[in-house]
Length: 174
Length: 174
Image (tube, rainbow over all chains, first blue to last red):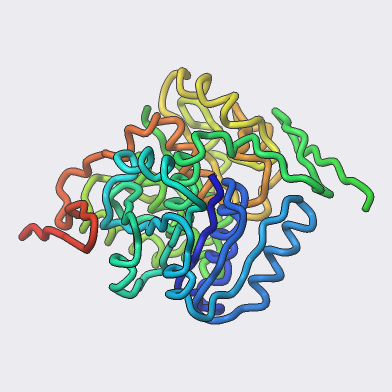
């Protein structure tokens, strides 16, 4: 299932590392790209582009100046991850069976109230406070049934050789 | 399986929100407590204690002045989450079948090299760069087989009522 992530409310000073972790988790757990809304942040774009150059695949990040338009114009299902939603374990099968590409919306601390109405599904990953990074990763892991764990990223310059005791990395010449 | 998390290399200025998200993910995904190493940070302790007061359970956080001693003296298995390790999908069954409480070690960017030798298992969650928050959450989710998604936290003052379209919260009087 083709999935794209929309991160709401990015603030460059306060959220730089969290948003970067969130976008890298989106990529590692099989999303094909992401939008972010809030304040435009060339440093965030660049940090993700650098990872893609080194680690392969074609994950792309785009700034959404008008995130409501991204959501309204989306030609597929829209799931909003919120701790107030319906339990992921009850919803993931229905979401996975839906038509078209999926947009997964994750907030920062203050998500505008209309988001709940714009989503096809409001879904919670546990009913506890934790992190948009963990909520997104576990949601994508459940959606993809674990297949994302062995995903290949074509064109990688760096590849890890799994190791019981050390760090082993192969580097391809460009 | 009783699990405790050890977060290495915390830096109060740079990591405050990431470490807070990491510890809350540990709690939400079923760990019973956590240690953190690096620089002592009363603000981090307090932010987690506040969550536990409101949301229940007895998850505790403790500063580890000597994290190597915590690892060496641990009476059970020690798993180290690292992108260089063996794939989680190949290791989680063996780890889940091991005796005694489990210590799950997660690093920041620079983990001292001796950690690889101190661990019983070095395990990777995807072989891609993402986040210690997502790595920990997906590892605990796989270890607990999803049972953590409906975990109850006794004594909660705040509880979410799952909702398709809004925010519903019950507040208990103390």
